[in-house]
Length: 232
Image (tube, rainbow, N blue to C red; front, top):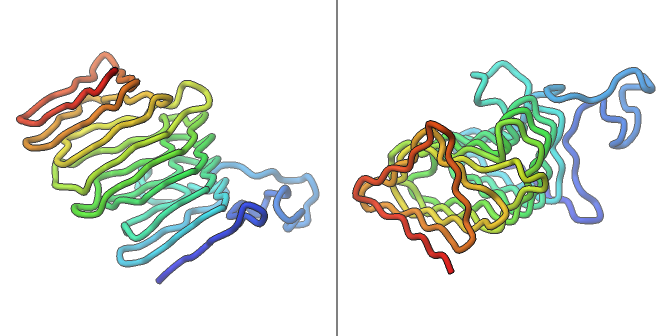
């Protein structure tokens, strides 16, 4: 099926907890007896072949449920025909977005106060591109996000114009890149994870002003691939 949740700047859409009195009042009628918390509800899940566009909306206080722990999120997607634009992903019990072997575009959005990753891409679509651009990340436990390449062919990947408002939410790339990846984020640190490998024929292109950091176990490996470092 298809979910179209397209608000406007003047009339945004909210997906939130029943305990959230800041949205449309005291719906559960308990006064100040309860307050919203991460994990109060489950997720918006897009199954394979489903479609969705969420724009000018907030999705908060979810991420609960009984999935394999790392796959929980406010939005869970197993379809690449999904896009998030001008969306707030906040206060999840785990991830803001969990996407498995698909490329969900996230643009012009705010990702904040999530227990684990803001955006977690566990593999990508083998053909369709991924765009993550002009987002603001803040106060997310695991970091701004994680993109785990699985060594399979994937569409072009573009990270552009993203930033962090607290200076602490870097984005991690890990696994084996097998396509084109462009990184153009002067205000968001790129972490290399335990091991980031550029596979045969693949390219990681770093724009001027990029900052790459590694932990004590972080490595950047080249296997017949290329890194284009375009400083000025």
